[in-house]
Amino acid sequence: MSFVGSTPVAEYIYATGTKNGKRVQALGGAKNHAIIMPDADVDNAVNALMGAAFGSCGERCMAISVAVCVGDETADMVVGKLQKEIANLKVGAGTDNANHMGPLVTKVHHEKVRGYVDLGVKEGADLIADGRDLVVAGHEDGFFLGPCLFDRVTSGMRIYQEEIFGPVLCVVRAESEEQAMQLIDDHEYGNGTCIFTRDGEAARYFADNIKVGMVGINVPLPVPVAYHSFGGWKRSLFGDLYAYGPDSVRFYTRRKTITQRWPSGGVREKAQFSFPGRQ
Image 1 (cartoon, rainbow, N blue to C red):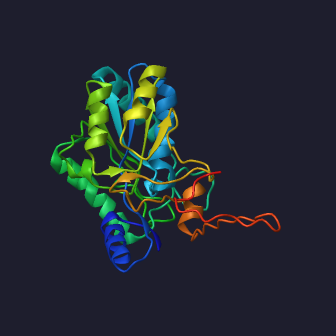
Image 2: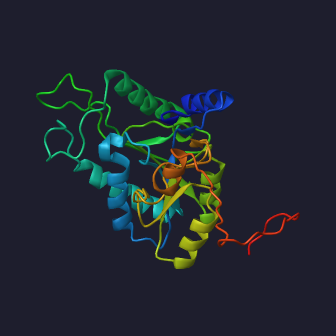
């Protein structure tokens, strides 16, 4: 049984399937973080965040929904540049390739995502860009929500804890790389993450120690090519075999081991009473 969906359903399918002797891989939710270090190329990072947060309206499991900026100076710069880029982002019919974002998938989901934006305001986050009142000419009844940007989000807020699955980017401020990494490690999801930096040592430390299944270095969506395995850690994946790559072959394969030996003609071997070893 192979499943991709929300964590509660993934966990239920995994528990039920394995209880009945099935092999199960169940991919669940995500809350993917990007760390922006003080030495990062901020223009590059902002361009990457725009696509990673708002591409596909944020409706993908690898979307970056949290930007963790190390230092207030870094955060102020990132937020300011994001605000300018968001003002130029084109939202309209998904059939028009000139648009950067189309509508959300359903009315119910539109209301859910908009509700998260309302909640973020109530929780005390600073709503820097508000896309709730967007109206697209000729599509007034469409499920459109403009890009939303929150600053000064904290780990106790639901907009930080839960997967919104929409065009909402939360900016969290941290004092160091270690503190930023601790935020990521403490989160229940561990699907994908990335870091923007010019420092090879910082990148290596991040890649080696972060508790997340897919890691990008100056890559906003660390989706591996098909011959590498795809999957997260913690409550983003239930099961021990990932999708894609060698794991996907193993998951759908029942392996058989065949041991053969062909003694030369006429030779009779003596009985062996010890456990067979390599000759």
